[in-house]
Image (tube, rainbow, N blue to C red; front, side, top):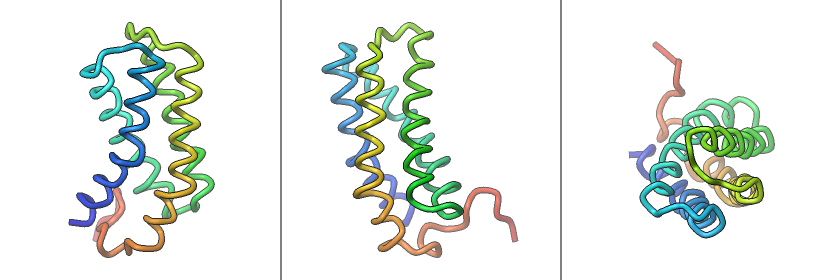
Length: 124
């Protein structure tokens, strides 16, 4: 149940602002914005929150999530999404601010490692 709660919180804090920025500044449709946001949120949750955050801490995980958002949105331009560079930068900055100020401290403080479950790659 820990993954459902923490991932739902990540969708609310990061997915919605990212989707709004993509729809308003990126001028793409809501279905496309939803698909891109879902893909980015899942990737950031797995890489940034389950792998990097427990090992390195808040700052590195926040920078990683922002860089991941920037890279994936920049990469999506080559798949036909008409995103401006400003929309990509603002999306990455918004995700980094929310992650650094709200989400990662919540994840560290309120959710123990036992409730999240084992990290990816841990085997017993």
